[in-house]
Amino acid sequence: MVSGYFITGTDTGCGKTLVTLGLMQRLQLAGLRVAGMKPVASGAARVAGELRNDDATQIQTQSSGDADYGLVNPYVFEPAIAPHLAARQSGREIEIAEIEACYRKLAVGADRLLVEGVGGWLVPLSDDCLLSDLAVRLRLPVIMVVGMRLGCINHSLLTQDGINGSGCHLIGWVANRIDPGMSSFDDNIATLQQRIAAPLLGVLPHLDRPDPLRVVKHLQLPASEFIR
Image (cartoon, rainbow, N blue to C red; front, side):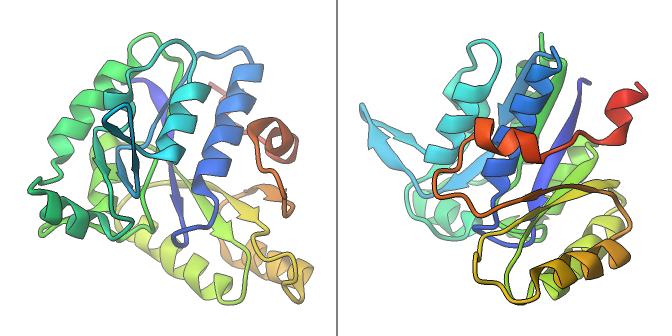
C-alpha cells in the first residue's frame, strides 16, 4: 500500500484539517503526488443536491490530480454530531472495509496519502468500532495535532497513550495555537516536548485566515521522509 500518514487530534476543532492541508502542500512542494482523504465527516451542506463537508472539499481540492469526492469522503452526514449518531440517524452504518476500499483506489498514482480522522482518537464510528480501529486497519503512522489551549497537556498525553495502546506508531505531533490568549504558551510546549515520545513537527501561530500556503512554512516533514 502507498506510504502516508493518519492525522488525528486531541479533540474536535483542534486543527486537523489545517495540518492535513499544510502537510499535503509541504509534500507537494517536495515533488510528490499527494492524495488526501477524510473518510468520515459530520456537518455538511447540500451543494447541487449532494451533501458536501467543507473540510473534505478542501482536502479534495488540495489533492494532486482529480479525486472523486465520494472516495475522499465516503461517509458524510448533515448534522454536526458524533459520527456514529449521525450515521444512525441517516440509516447507514460506517464500515471500515468500505473506507479501506476507497483508500486503495485513492492510493493509485499517489506517492503519499494523508487520512484525516474525525474528532479524537477514540470517537465511535459504530456500536463496535472506534476511529482508532480504522487507523490500525490502514497501518499508517500517526501524526497528532494538539489544540493549544487550557487542558491540552492532559488531552495530549491521553491521546498518546491511546495511540500507543492501539499498536500504532506516533511519528510526530503539531502544536496549533487555537487560543491566542493562552497563558504560559511556551511552558506548555516545553512540557509537551518532555512528555510526548515523538518529535515536534511544527508550532502553528494563531491565524486569522488559515490556509496551506501560510501554514506550510511552520511545518516540517517526519524524519522518515528523508531516509526512505
